[in-house]
Length: 114
Image 1 (cartoon, helix red, strand yellow):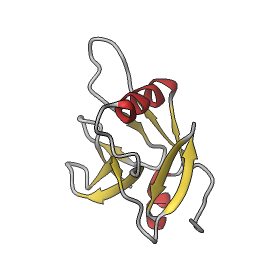
Image 2 (tube, helix red, strand yellow):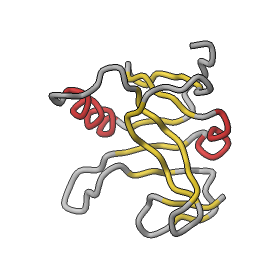
Image 3 (cartoon, helix red, strand yellow):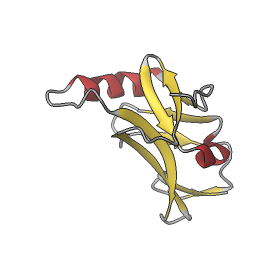
Image 4 (cartoon, helix red, strand yellow):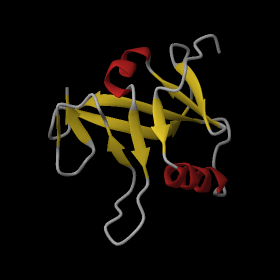
């Protein structure tokens, strides 16, 4: 794990709590790490990736509150400084991304443009 970087994104306490719940479920593969990234597509041009996955040799590694995370090096340009939240309440719909690098976001909150 040579590619260790400082934390490029921030998770709120609610998001950390939800991630830990997911990791504590029966059958969770403890060998997986949390992948944070982007991919082409979505209504605004790019979509966020937030999923448990196996680390790849070219991944950059970082840890958030003890949760091992990875990201492709090129994705930092799009994600640096982003906050990921898990809101609670009647209108909660899953993880919410607040990205200071996005010039435009869509109504669903899962895609953006730079």
